[in-house]
Length: 252
Ligand code: NDP
Ligand code: 8X3
Image (tube, rainbow, N blue to C red; front, side, top):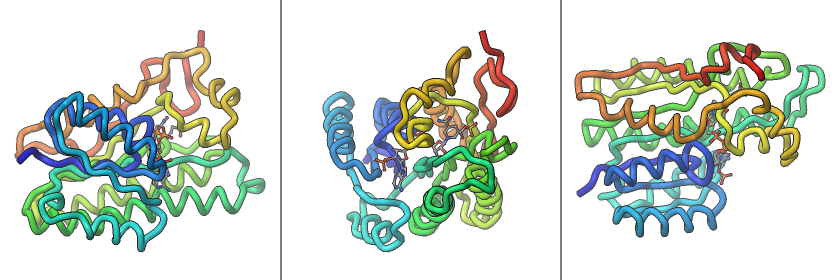
């Protein structure tokens, strides 16, 4: 039986890149997201390219009932999850606090904080039962700093940073590793989502400097989960060389 990784938000960007690297290294995969066609296509590709087993679960992490229903109805052998990558997340809008959109705020808080919590509660109980596991939480440079108009997104990622530390304490007695991964700018669908589909505005975010690619983060996560049993990387901030902070870029 192969080791098993569960990746939330595997239909794009960092989650999809993680799926590929874990499949290449013979993990069986549970992949989640809301876009079923993308999940199905990825499953077919990974199963055919790497001869691994892939389960896809199509649900919105904000829907507590669906999270529990989808995860708890997995067959017992699929509940032996070795690695959980809490990756599903997003930003919506970039506005001064007084101009913020309530719906954007709700979406970010419900996805980045509450969704991560729902999945973690279910899967950490399986890990406790299995007496092992590794949870990798996608924070951000926005978990460590705040920037103009980033208010609520930064707040949600600061919450992920706090939860990452708190989980590590609570799960210590169960031998479960917990790691926070905090990337700077990674060129994915992230900015298209932030700007509600405006691709031109999204492309400008990465203009004039070389951002990270999803593959860079996937390789880092693979490194983190392949440390020896007695080693845990608690927290890792990974930036493009041309980005010193959220507001300092070396632009050409
Ligand atoms: P993408 O937009 O490319 O991918 C986001 C993934 O999250 C998609 O697979 C999407 O799937 C999933 N997702 C979003 N909302 C939900 C939801 N409500 N329910 C289920 N799945 C959801 O962005 P990235 O790959 O860049 O982002 C991945 C993570 O990395 C996020 O947590 C983000 O905050 C973080 N991050 C990103 C950085 C960047 O610069 N790109 C930098 C630092 C951190 P679907 O739409 O199919 O549901
Ligand atoms: C994504 C990176 O700088 O847009 O978390 O917040 S940033």
